[in-house]
Amino acid sequence: MKTEADKEWEHLVNMPDEDIDFSDIPKTTAEMWKNAEVGKFYRPVKKQVTVRIDADILAWLQADGAGYQTRLNQLLREAMLQSLKKAA
Image 1 (cartoon, rainbow, N blue to C red):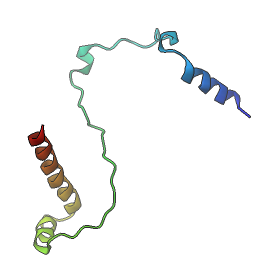
Image 2 (image 1 turned 120 degrees about the vertical axis):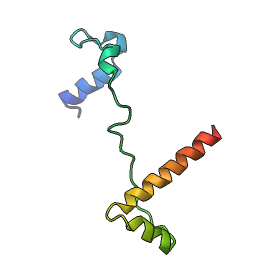
Image 3 (image 1 turned 90 degrees about the vertical axis):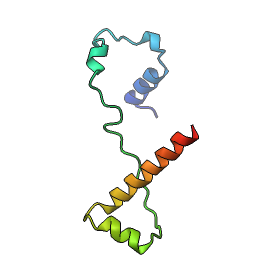
């Protein structure tokens, strides 16, 4: 059995955009967005995997202390982006 909240959500989901009242929402301007940072809060989904890395590479990554996995990820991301740039 549908609750009142379920019925209200269903009504809202099916409402055409032109029927939505935006009058209480202030308009945005280019000035408001000039300092916006794209991707600032983006955090890619992490996936735990097991990978075999040469011992000297692992030692080099760990030499700077904690955060070696983050550094490894950054190096791989830079390589991926360069590869994608070349392919485009």
